[in-house]
Image (cartoon, rainbow, N blue to C red; front, side):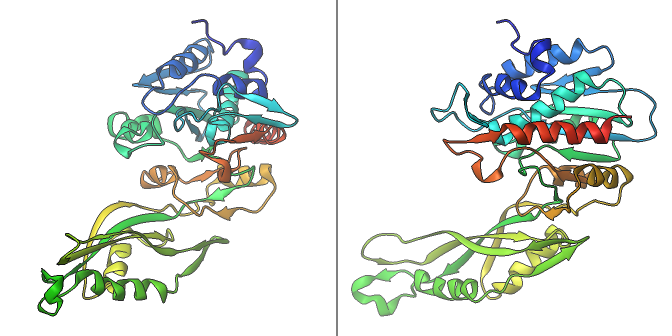
Length: 356
């Protein structure tokens, strides 16, 4: 198949967005799009290009005093009758338009059209962000080629509708378990009903008051929610176990260990098991490239209420923020779309920031 990312497509980030969207790339099936991206990057003589699986890295080597990263994932959630892309007025519709091929288009456009940026730039186009972290391209690069990620600052081109969303919340999943004693329901008094015992867990959740934390002018609101409940043996058995699945979204001033300790305090007296966890990321707005990026965008940053791969950069000591043209509320929706004006504004902003 001929590469649809031709020179005339690459110079226009809007046309490039459509071309990228029309290359289907559901998670774990990114080879076709990674091949196309690698091909155009290798033709750009000012870039050094490497590949790991379906993750493509390209970087300038200009000897600048600082290096920045522009990163975006190539994969999408499964197609939902929304390919190929279509255009209606100022909107491009299609799977991955908002999350996040509009952002990928910005990075790829700059990679091939701006050979002499004021910083050295590493461009990362990575696989499998939408699924389990064991497949995540950034995670795999950090394990196998950590030198690829050395930088002073990173911009993750996740959808933010053209705003700056700094840092991100941490997330933790726990099972809160209540225990009882089985009995026949005809003689229920001989048992202890574990599902009834979960009522206290739910009462604590209902009366919980989440923290609101402001860091570097960005306000993070924590949240604690029951997301699943299971228990019961049969229609005539008093159950001896009930599990309430609980999710905590915590501000990045808490570590994972502190978040776990907080949950054990909230559910004191119950068995609390951490089943999944990811750290948050502080705003990271003090680095010189970050300050210049804020000036280029021209709006005040807000806290990222959610988890993104900026946390992976933060874990490596690299300050990072989220900035992209898509609307995050449209991610994964059947009517997912991106505004053409936001793509053009994003390209102009990144050019102002990076051009010497």
